[in-house]
Length: 154
Image 1 (cartoon, rainbow, N blue to C red):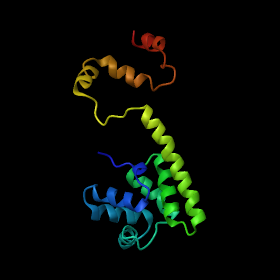
Image 2 (image 1 turned 180 degrees about the vertical axis):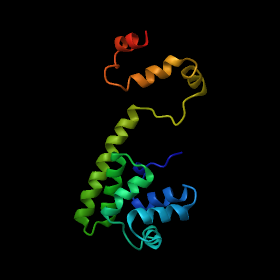
Image 3 (image 1 turned 90 degrees about the vertical axis):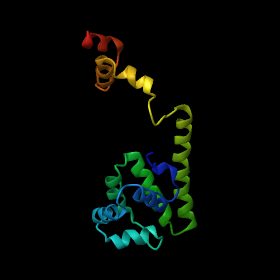
Image 4 (image 1 turned 135 degrees about the horizontal axis):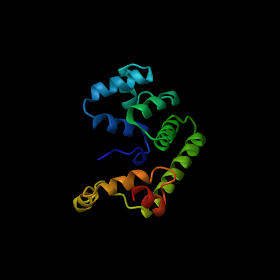
């Protein structure tokens, strides 16, 4: 199961979970340190809550974990929230985080997301070439209508 940054309110918890579930944690921590221009000891100290990441460290984390733009934005907010030096600033970032989570919650309630496609549906999908062709074509401008698909596929 993929770990989602949106399930966290603390960037360190997210990092600990991502680093612990991705094969060799030592190698991954070293890679993260290399990407952020720091030492592995810095990453350890961040995870041990002795130091904070800076906003400049967020893009390399996004790169390492393959974050989407939305995930990267949320991770940045988590870092800024964690680094907040005043209650006012902490409240400001918490409000932004909560708003994103609320919007996602409404969307996720409307859309059912399954991790796996049932075997019967997979069998139908892979049974004929045109299912895949239609799937690929609808991503191309000009082929989003039934008529355009029918004309292209005869």
